[in-house]
Length: 101
Image (cartoon, rainbow, N blue to C red; front, side, top):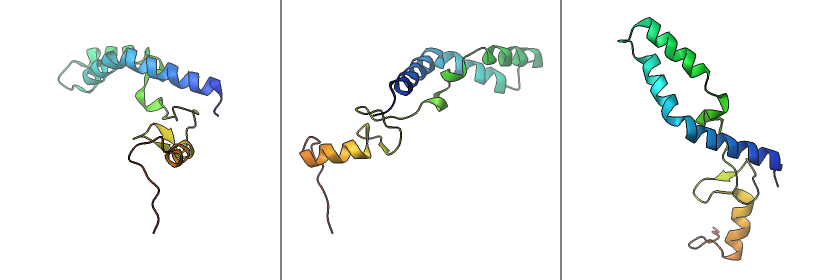
């Protein structure tokens, strides 16, 4: 089980990213737009720097929904590889079965 603080920190990042998403995209477009005057682009850069760093979607870490484990994440099921295997062997994941060759 991951530390509760790590899980909560990631939840906060998800909330911040959702909150500032539109503003980030708008400011990035204004900074990249070469048809705008340089003063306006610099003002957009200054405004962009005021947005918290944790509002960036790149900082969000995929974590297991059950344990919070950050490694071995299987996105289709939102689980870590360990919990995925346990639940699959118990038959709680429909359509998943163990293969052998």
